[in-house]
Image (tube, rainbow, N blue to C red; front, side, top):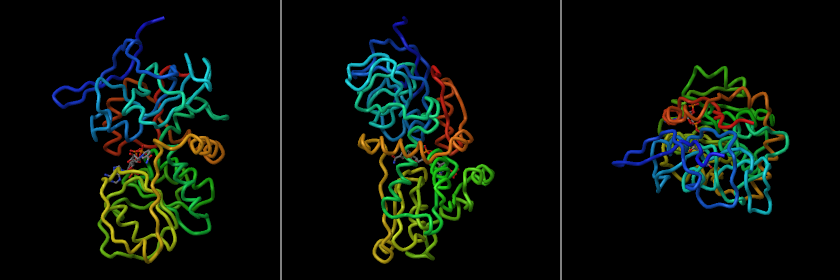
Length: 332
Ligand SMILES: NC(=O)c1ccc[n+]([C@@H]2O[C@H](COP(=O)([O-])OP(=O)(O)OC[C@H]3O[C@@H](n4cnc5c(N)ncnc54)[C@H](OP(=O)(O)O)[C@@H]3O)[C@@H](O)[C@H]2O)c1
């Protein structure tokens, strides 16, 4: 057996981060009680940031990115896992603070792993990945707040992206009327196939709002964009509704008045997939298995290899990656 493994390794020199495929000594694997042979990983917006050294998410180099992976346990000192178990990891700052899934091997804490949910292959798990998990978490959080399908249109911003595509497919499958905003009008057919009934031009929501309240339009929202888009859509939320704040693809600021909150009882619900407690994780994965149609999941994926990751990392930051990206490492 080789004493090295292949990985995307990030190095920092002169404050510039560069990515290369390298053979890494097994002895360099970090501490952890479970070693996983990675089958698949994926590409999330945060991976794009890490691959390009943006946002100071990584403090120590050399670093292996990849915020999620699926694979098979190779060795374990954790009571819940044994060699041969199929597992999935999302979150826990893996790929940021800890070495991640852009590698043939990953060593992590067993407490961070979940067993591959029934009904999924290892590749399906990464077609879903952090983005899909977060989409389900956001839908579930809105429903816990009181969202029901008879209340009207639910808006998904950044609809052609990863979180947006999975959120659209789930909402539509649950019977919601989904309005999808996108900056890519050429993706209208793709979005309609996922279940969007109304395609909204991203530019329509991107302007700063001219008034603190506008006509009540949306019964709920999954927002991947933030910035002026979030300021704007807050003025258009229906009485008692909520926005699940998921992303920051359009900036991390928020300028608003309190009037949507005080006069319409609108709420912003924060969505965090990274430190989400294990019990809630398992419940969310079970719901994904029930509510996400596999045909739609398969329609939204593109397949790539580890070698493509540096370029893909640039593309996702430009909003040029559609749906979900599955990266085959060892397959299986
Ligand atoms: N809170 C959490 O736990 C959590 C978990 C996962 C992801 N996130 C965040 O959620 C967001 C989506 O993640 P993702 O992995 O789905 O990324 P993604 O695939 O890149 O999707 C983001 C989408 O936002 C739109 N967009 C991109 N740049 C924009 C801009 N400047 N202005 C307006 N819209 C823009 C694009 O959609 P269109 O082409 O359709 O307009 C793009 O596809 C990211 O900000 C990510 O960091 C948060």
